[in-house]
Length: 522
Image (cartoon, rainbow, N blue to C red; front, top):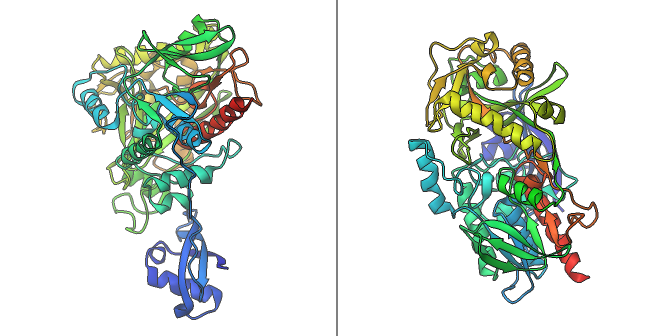
């Protein structure tokens, strides 16, 4: 059996295999030559003091053969003639549901309104270069869902939904580096994630599953209170006794469809705000205690941060922080502006960006005249339309320097920015709900005290970050995970209000697929 060792070393030693092996040998009081191999199980950076250390847990093989702790052999099988299950949405939840269905001996039919990765890229280029929004193919809709172009963060605290480690193993199996299995905050990178998503889809197809692009669910086929299939693209029918509804947080037409058919949905709180961008060198300096005009150590990754505050009885917090990243347009329809952030795998860009958002709930929705199950969605749309108008169209984002945001002053000049469609000076107080804006004003000043240099005129704020989670919850039975009104309808993941991010969505997809298998046994 390998010996499990907890060890703290300098960042330089952590990357020098020979020196690190000597450190392990010293820790175990053995000669380095007796160590045949080692395998990292956990790794994190402790930057609380100027003496930055890398903290690791390692399996060490002393005069014994190597045993891979990450060995993973999924039970994929041929299912082309098996009982079908419709999966609406080819995001993380839909793909992981498809893989689990195959392991259970069922045939997934995954229907995706958007395009495959290759063709989707053309529509993303049109958004960034021409300000054109294709409502069916964008940063939210298409192969891999919003996750494909949302940085590839694989960190979640939602361990009650399933096995985080198993989800990471799947990503590793399809091409992600081993690092995602042991890093404290694993990350794939937007440049690498599309290839992994394609590999997942190809595996599903090789087993006999179907993945249909440009195929939008437009109605449900019901027999009384029992699901029998779906209508796609208005006039084509696909039949199956179960539907995993994993359409994501931006599929507003699905919320409207369910509401129109008197199938219960509920308005839910979410978070809304802006995206803020600093120079990465500033974030490195604040987190690694180094001069802002000098590069960080080559042995350290670009620094990240997490900030949270309670202001005016509201939670204000950073969301989806992207070191070395880019701000991108995430709108799904003309006339509404949404921004998001992502990073390449090396996180080597000039800028660091993060969402900065404030919690909003039913009382806020009602204050602006929105009530009922679609109130949160309508409130969200209101803010996104104001942002579009303030930007002037073509996905140009309203922007403001951070200090001007706090002073409620239009910025005379704007900084260089990673957001390709362009920016336009505007007052965020005229875009954001008053309660959100006032809470953020106080939070920025507070964050500047917690994190030296954070509150600065050399930071840009863009609106609006509004798709943090679904504004709607689709109810489901706690045990069967079926909708309480409709047999065979399985609400799933972010769009149904049960996940927030790639891994939690993936876990929920697997969990729901397991319940579909149980349903088919009855």
